[in-house]
Image (cartoon, rainbow, N blue to C red):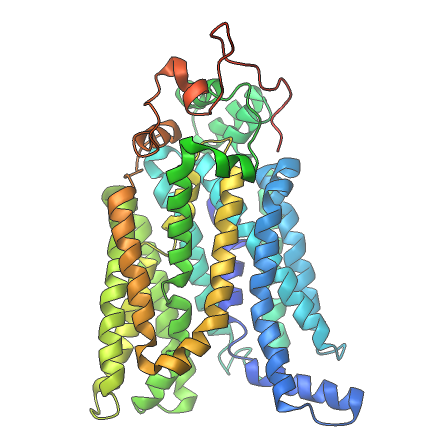
Length: 496
């Protein structure tokens, strides 16, 4: 219940905002022109409307970066559940600004609304995976974590469906596309307060054992949760006297160096693998195949459907196959289909049926992405780090995610102009290098405790594999004093 409603008010909204601006783009630009005419008595210059539209679309990524940079401070104050509840406020405010901008004759409201919605998404894509990873039993942690990816895909698909001309994709109704943003947020606000906080957070950071026990009992549906509590205690004993580390401390700590490098590489590949750029070509390829313009929105629905189906399939098999094989398969398959797409695009003008093969390649690229790379990077960010490192790790991962997203949006039009159909070869390189890195460095994490995963990196980090008595010294880099006892770093409660 928490996984579904948590993702509905978080991941779903992120996915929805990725696709919702496509259908009403023409009407929004017309609104900009009308508003400009009313204010200044002249038609808006073409370059100005292009600039305003570019800002409207790209400022979502700027908001996401702001959200990712602020999430650890909010989590410190409000916890995992409290952060998601606060985040719904951003979604509601953004929905009001975006849906009322036309009536208020203010394109500034649309731009600010998109910025705030970006903040909401930046917070959600860090707080939700952290929450889901901490509440999940380790044998289904991957499947639960994949709800993040599944709901992103459902959000994209919902934006495509609601944007159809028969529904809200009309000049008189486009503002209702943005009003819809408030619905998932309100549903989450109604359900989430009645569900428990993360038991790991309650026990390790709030020292609330009774609250953690009750949370485990509700999540797992059983009275005896002593085994789960002991697992958390085992990690907590190694962190009893250590505060939650900052980003700078995380960057400096050699005990987690390769975990950090792995997350940065994986999250950069998540955005730089080329999925966002694939949308630039979809409509053009469909037109080349001979489909009428009025049919394009309906055919494009197939991309959202393939995304969702692949994400659901990945969620069903992730605990059998594992994280590492799915990631490597996804990136490798994308490299293959991007290569084929490059070939097909270069021959589509000379062979009549070639655009159909190009479109099949596009669907295959999307399916490959959602089979692993579309959701597992968020799961790994929670799994590769223990409790004290996790908030800082999610901040770094979120920053890399949104900076890479912005980079693709900024540079791909220039790459496309320079390389034409060969532009996708850039993404072949990214996907290939990502697959090689993951094959060499990443250990399998399925059905392992957070302590087990950290210890599996000990060799590559050139750290001794710690015994239970050495956990505080070696895993958490606490230096012993002259008497051989671990130094008391701080007696205060966990803080940032």
